[in-house]
Length: 118
Image 1: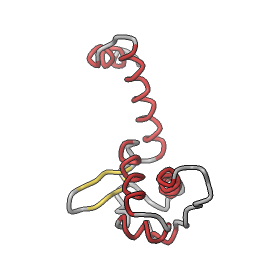
Image 2: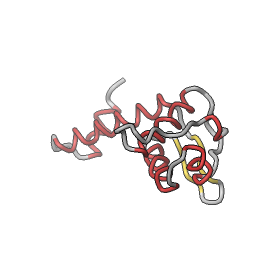
Image 3: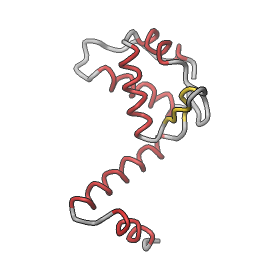
């Protein structure tokens, strides 16, 4: 992914800056500008292009890692690890796990339920 594909963040927008950064990177992945396995530019470079603090970019990158879109590898940087569809499945799975916990189902039982579905 070329950091010049990203644009400056709208500081007048009420959306938190890290959410705006994450949305731009998410869009780049969805549009195929950043493909699975591809390394992202360093956070400081992304921050400079988007006119935000490096910590804002790092917060966005962590959120995208939690969504399953990025992976962090020591010495190898941040790489695209998934597609928006995979990220959506992971988000739904997290919702399901949370719901199951609220209903008193332990993870092992939830796994058994899922395995029983074909």
